[in-house]
Length: 341
Ligand code: ARG
Image (cartoon, rainbow, N blue to C red; front, side, top):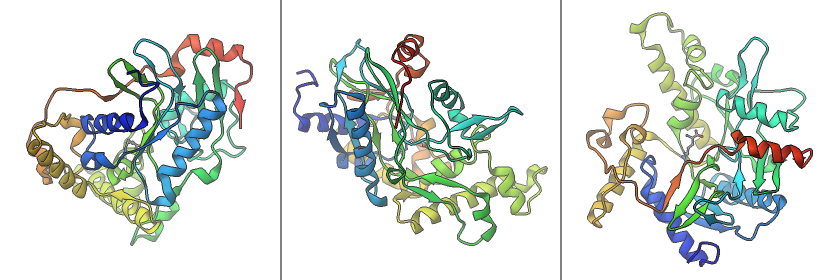
């Protein structure tokens, strides 16, 4: 049966399987807890936007994060469906500054520029943590932009349990990672808009978002505050900065009452999941390079084995970024100023 008329219960089952199948996710042990929000009836830009807000509210749940997926109207495999242009429902802007550097999240710089081209006006005083508006496209009806009201965006200011200076780095992060640009597919059915979310693992923020050189690039600043010589390889300044970033992020989320898992617990839970799957006669699709956390990998059992190379469906799949498609930008222009708040 086409996903358009399928029973919500059946779609929920498929979505849980898609999560269970996801080769890159270390957090799959709780795949059976995924909740489905059925927004297949959303027909207008506004209705899609409102369902996104309901998703944020339900999944954030005041900090006690609930894993959830919202499904919008599906299409057949080759058709073009509803698209949320943002890679996640909550992401921070990256502004190109005159000297060539970037204020905010460099990962979002190109997308931020695109949104500004479409009429988005950043806050009067720009910061490193300005939440981007949602860009929602309906097939044949162009794209519209929507500012997310503050109360839907739970954020955690980052402090360190011991170092008072840490807070002055001015770091913060959003509580909810909600992937919004992947397709959820099974049989001949494709949900081109199906945002899903769960809680964070500490390294995603501390090691990658803050530590990566092409993201917030915080290792030199943290190491300097720790009094480490950043020119000496033997001082392991990067390693030590990473550990303190993890402590700070984990501590701050805990204090704020926001769900988060540390990578060691996540690794253990993942191994339990693997054992359970194998006991049920299923092998575990897995991509080692994504599964093993970016820190302390070899301290975890999951480091020492391989995973199934098959990629079964139901699945979450990458799609071509909708905002890079010229045909769409033309139709967006045709519909006038797409900005709505
Ligand atoms: N790594 C991504 C980020 O930092 C989020 C990916 C999904 N993560 C999750 N725990 N569900 O925003």
